[in-house]
Length: 354
Image (cartoon, rainbow, N blue to C red; front, side, top):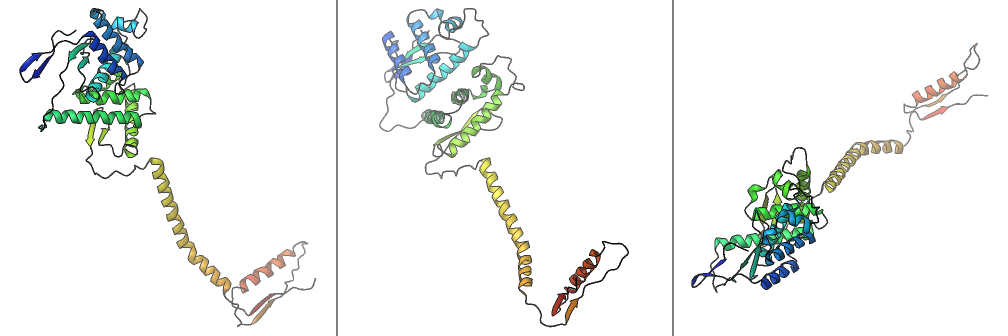
């Protein structure tokens, strides 16, 4: 199981703890699988059950990538070492166990771990932590509390902020946050993310495959929406800066004002359009209102009673060419129009005999 028996520090000095019994290990396994904080699909749970039972049955030497791929994931016996399924699922299982012991399993009597580079589980007994009446907060305690708060914030994001998003976005943010909290943030590069999360091969090229860039942008948008709505009062906010895969954690002090909802691009364009329409309407009103007032004043102005009376008699038109009589009527109309511009007392367009 483990090459070295676990130790615990007590008041009497350093004392060796007994290895847990198979029954106790199976009980601990059941507690982990039943906990809602152990967030893995069925294939990951089957992986954990398989390696624990094989180890308890004395067959730890058989726990290899090939046997796991065939017996747990149903791969064909001709599977090649290039198939990354076991490596990917093992990384997810390690992160799920780390999260469980940080959130729900802090006081569990037995710890189950899967060391890096191996699929054989390690079982260790644990001593409950004795809390003094007036404890002095140490930097380690503070760091663990912040890590716990960050994981709780991640759980809320997965439940409320990314509940309707794709499974690979949920896997990606869980991977990034867990790696950062476990001190492996410097490893968060495009190639490691592609191989550990999306199952890409080791020759992954981010210049030709945009999957990480696309999924990261979707996560940023989902987080912005979540913290502007349901997560407005979340005490810890998870952020990803542009062109970075490492999460940053922002602690919001109690009593801090809640940020107003972020205006979406659609609402912003509607607001801009409304402002422009208002300005345009105001400008048109400013231009045409004086003109309309002038026209109304002119129409309402009474006819001057001064000046002579003028009558325009019909104009006779003689021509050798028949059909040109309309020219005479047109000249009469033009003359009436010219004279109408003056302030005559009365202007008459006289009608001559037929």
